[in-house]
Image (cartoon, rainbow, N blue to C red):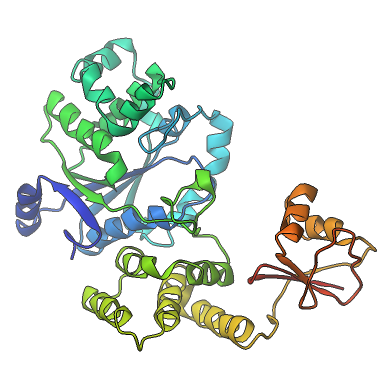
Length: 383
């Protein structure tokens, strides 16, 4: 399953197979840019693959892109990604190691920050690297072609990103690199630059992309993520809110239950006598247990059954002190809404309940002892 589970493409597959069967300890690289404070399940797909190599005894190399994160990768974007400040990148990566450690054994992980070598490069070296690529190589990429056709701006800065990711492979002497399918050009740049620097070109293993909670590719930019640091109850609930059509993909990419069991779930979903909710409960449990442990996963499952199937109230709901506020102010103060305008929108959408009754007026009064509910999963008690 190492070379097939969740894998879209491998380059050079036969060479990688020989390396794995030779007994050689491979240096397997993965780079992650801290463009957001949170790692999410989309990142977990490649991190789990990296862990697979680690558990087989290979040396995994994790690169935190504190320099590439500033420059910005637009491989998966329909418009130019803005540059981030160094301060913003530092803030974003504060808990990156803690989050990566939820899946990897950090004691056996070789860690690098790519500013260590990228900051030192001058025009002469960058020119040498750029000479290995043509402009047509870059602009032939699908998303760049679309932007050109739409008359959208493509900055010269964007041309530099593949060079930097490629040079990371040179700096750590990678034998193999992991990445999503949207990283294909950048991953191949590593092979090109390694050859230019007299190194054997790395093998590449590309993993599939997964959909977020809204059906689009999971991305922090779109806010459709299931994050490593979500509370167990939130993680469980978000997985339960996924469309049934995404279940098999999540089992394959975001858990490590045996693929034969995944195939059994897939067959069961075609059976008219199967309730998809029961299989989804298994999925939510497996995902939550992976990050939060079996005890937290079991508690989240029991609470989900209690709240959503038996219509009970959750035992551990947060509370807010009564201060005579109306529903709009209370939603903002309790962080069920980020602003008064969002609070009004939620009320218009009939997404807010007080003591189980849908609220339709933004002038509704909140009393001590009320339980405020947003959607299906979020509750706050007024004390």
